[in-house]
Image 1 (cartoon, one colour):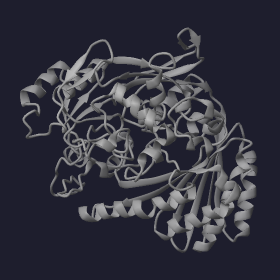
Image 2 (tube, helix red, strand yellow; image 1 turned 90 degrees about the vertical axis):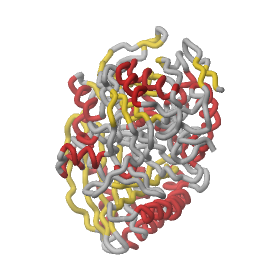
Image 3 (tube, one colour; image 1 turned 135 degrees about the vertical axis):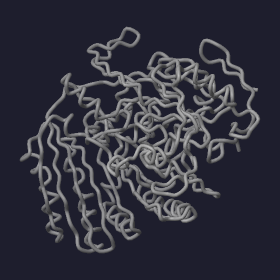
Image 4 (cartoon, helix red, strand yellow; image 1 turned 60 degrees about the horizontal axis):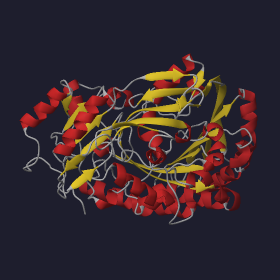
Length: 552
């Protein structure tokens, strides 16, 4: 028997060690589902995998790959491998397949447009001991916003955007802010903010929901070196808790929950209705892009060592810098994108010239250097996100000390990853204000504050791979790629960004949350004593099986 004393009323539930699934005596009947549908005024949806939905809708290839389109399908994930159950036995629903099983896609979704809809869904899940999932856009790289045989709490249509010049908390003026619903994507916020002559701290992906998992993980931006992480700039959340109460979390109201929501991991704390962010006056920026080509693996390693030695070239202007390294054991391409606040094109090229000159000296070929100057709002994001593929990540926050003391280790690590057929994506979205904000009390893993780069290894596969081979592929990725990044970042106690990491991290509590984990567990126990909100590699997930269905 579990008793929750949070909120305005006491909630008592009898729990078994496992959630109810179809076929279990406690699983809701058709009449129960119908009653829930009536309670939320017909907003209960039967959920199907994206391949089945697209078959019924007649999706084009462009729609299948469109994040903007896929976010309108309740069962669709940005990376559609998270919709599959690879078994054994496998339950798959593949595009152009001949059969379709439900896999790891929820059974029903509450298509919420009001707080009351979320509250009704939570009460129903509590009363019937159901697994729940929380999803906004589905731009989720660890599979946390979908779950087998679950009830989905879908927040995609919380679309409010409100700008305020003088936002107060307990009478204290916090300055200019924007409050956004948990269904609003970054692209939409940038456009709305530009109309108000404002800017806010957000990432590059169009369909990432700012008030969703993004800020619960930390949230990085091209302008983080100037303004800090997105979670550093959140002033308030409004959230529905596991006992269905609707509360405000900020520095005064539920400050422990406010602490956890900023860096304590996506999907573990409740259903965010909206969040309030600081805004800044918009500004001009220049986006500098260039490609650097190498002809051998050794030359690539030398290039990346040189890149590491130049990484501090842009500290004085606090530029945001992204790089993508693709190739093989022979030739490779390093693509660089750098955002410079308040610099024009010529000044931006001057900032990059020292590194590019040294790259040429190595024999590398520099191509397609270009700049574009405009409002930062227009430069920082893209119109759409290419999605609908099978993809997994592994990542580490690389300490500044590695760049200062052992830049050759970086070149060696990238050579090793390329030799394994693994492309690398890196971002210099740390240092500067991110490091300065180390005094902010939040659950953001301290590795962010000491890092100089966030580096990701990526692997894709197509649907010709068998389920057994996918399982082996994923395990091999964790076993062979993760140690390369971990060793580069300092070993067993190195840190990773939980929104862009490996869900199979062998010690996720340390890697994603570091010294904050024990406090996060205590806060989780206070606000969600029955673990209603369990996600893979999330707080207290080690007490549940991989599906989040049974306690272990």
